[in-house]
Length: 59
Picture 1 (cartoon, rainbow, N blue to C red):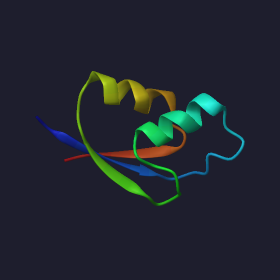
Picture 2: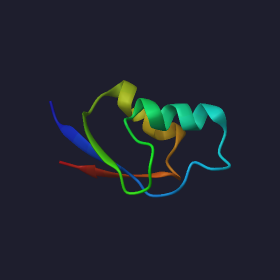
Picture 3: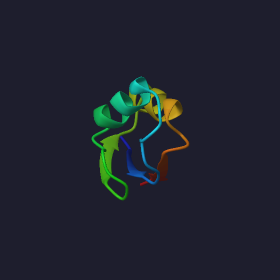
Picture 4: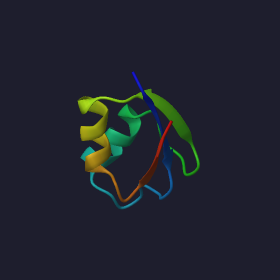
């Protein structure tokens, strides 16, 4: 399977609690922190909830 690199680009301060939880589930928590995850519908759904806070790179 392919992998994607997700990097947090904006702060979660002021965002809704569900969005903060989604960032935590993606393994993020600070601006500039990155995580490499296996691409799939679950991960894509989480990214779709917080597109304004993260940057996605295909690898």
